[in-house]
Image (cartoon, rainbow, N blue to C red):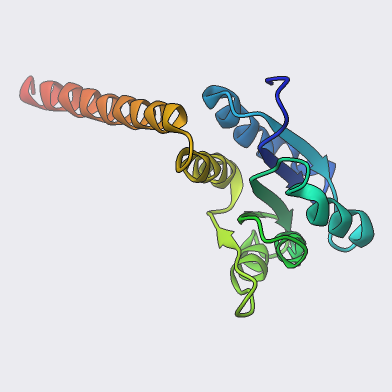
Length: 171
């Protein structure tokens, strides 16, 4: 991670979410975006979570990603204490396999928005990419890196398609 001040905060409701949010850390590293990771719970550490959220902008944070499962109120609690963009990552857990977390994250009352991505590692990766997109609005170099990333993704899929077409033609 870069030694510059963090621009993205990745908060997880429990240390057990670390494996999942590692996908976000990897994506932010890929783009060279400095970040901070925290374990803060909406239910078990409500004061510290609110305090972190309230001070995030002053600390240089531009976007907050929040991963939480079950009654996943972390993104909403954070959003209630900051005007920064908050992206919620529902964590799949028992007994509802993430549906509870998805609904808790996506159903915010009017006036306190939370962007919500899919559950799991794909969601963590997309939340980081969404944060990069937000930062790229005011960072031309990051915007160029994002365009390169998208072009590389496109090339990978088209290569896989060409290989499939070749295999089918040889049948």
